[in-house]
Length: 94
Image 1: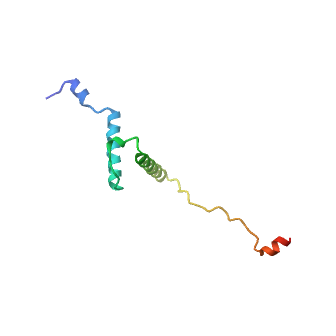
Image 2: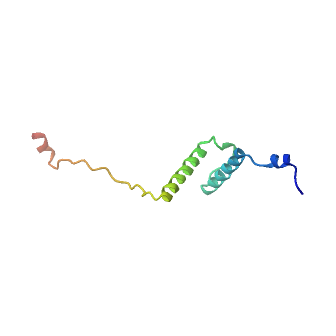
Image 3: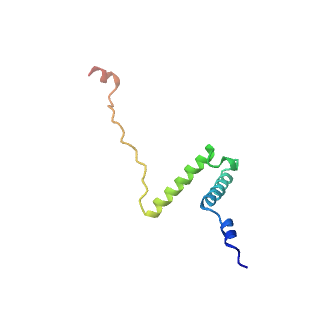
């Protein structure tokens, strides 16, 4: 049975609503995995959600770097400052 156009338009999810439910579902999964208290009203507001967003962005950047074939930057220590090995008494005399 074909439905009228206004019903199809009314029941269709708008992109804003879809994004909201997707974010809510991802945040719920994050809270479950990290054993955090989940509250729907904290979405987009709490410090906990901000940490979730930072984590999600980090995963996104890491995934893009791996897919692009760019080599991962390795941590390198800055060069050590050279100090004189002479005892202090000899350093003061010079």
